[in-house]
View 1: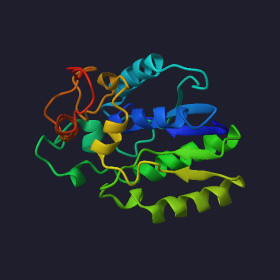
View 2: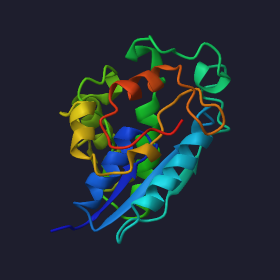
View 3: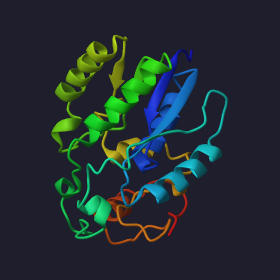
View 4: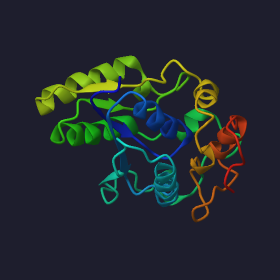
Length: 213
């Protein structure tokens, strides 16, 4: 039986779109949350995320909420904002690391959840994620810190943490994954088909239908 509410950190990529569906099967109310930092791919991500949410719209799915830190300058000069030296097709996964990304996402989601009286925050981290801010130790530490800072009962959940990307996508093949967007150097709202994320998507295209291009 579905119960309770959750805030889902949704970027519009393959992992987070599957996470929205996972949440809808378990929670009475699901609030997708997009956090803006002024990164090069955000306009395209938001376009495709809105289309995906419209396609899976159902009772309990709230309209997309957005938080905006894009004028903070945190990533000024970084490849994620400049579009220069973007990790390419053959780059390793570590190349796409954004300093403090999950910490920044979870702080915003925590404040949002606390203000809206939601206890659960969902993030789509997968098995094999190489970054230190995607570990159980980090999530437990962030959860304790958010509870202390906000004086609220909050819980950070990463339900796909023990799943590979292929396992997660195989489980959610029924979703309109052609509307998911994974590119860090888009051309308008289209993928570049040359970056690290486009290569990753090509490797794990197990969903039905053709990707947008």
